[in-house]
Length: 332
Ligand code: NAD
Image (spheres, rainbow, N blue to C red):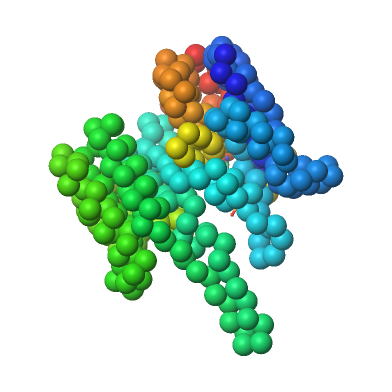
């Protein structure tokens, strides 16, 4: 039995986590959960935003499944999500977006994997406010090492998964230094992967191309902020935030979490779609070598999508979060 750190999060987090746990139990996946939490949940209970016990659990288990955690807008505490990624140098944020039979969208042939640099750029935490002059600076720190690591991860993934093209997304026409550092890193690494085509797109054009002809993209690699925005755009192409998975991967630790947030507008109603977290959990199973369980659960989930009635409301169905889980279980 592999022990996994389970962070339910807040908002819809506990609901979708319960659904995934129920499906894993029914499928007899050989994992045990060590439940730890962070953010407003632990803070409101009189504890720390990131409890020492969570850090110890992550250090011990090296693999976690995480629900969304709310970040206050404007002031308040720093994002727990960003902090965990930086604390453990989880420099790859891997977000697949694939069209699924049964999930209706205007696009049918999307099959791309977005690699978002996960610890640097505009999320470096270098923000300053000069009150006297009314000037706020947010510094996008990009390092050569950080660019090299994420670009190499994208090429390695492309090689291992028989993908043909890596598209580097940047703004090097305006960000002459930071943008060039990123694209030059990709250009330096690309010759080591002669079977893979290197392509590059400026971020604004990329947004247009993605909504116009998304099937042209294969593996996409970009800096932190662009990746954050593009991954929600890609989610929109394949059925919305309720269905897209994500993984934060470092050298020897990985935290799997859905792309979406805590969805306060639907929290507590039992109607959230657990697919995004379930797909993240399936990525996690592949990561720990449980390929058979991953494939079996994925097949049951895909079967569920073919009957709209069995899906949650965001996909046009009538099922609650837990009914969807039971529907997946019925197809195992
Ligand atoms: P959100 O992703 O929570 O919600 C955006 C929209 O998508 C909402 O209408 C929501 O109802 C819908 N949605 C999201 N997940 C869904 C699901 N599983 N099923 C059905 N519908 C779903 O984005 P937001 O409202 O901008 O952010 C809310 C909070 O979440 C913020 O505090 C933000 O900082 C945080 N957040 C956390 C993470 C994370 O934990 N990794 C990621 C993104 C946002």
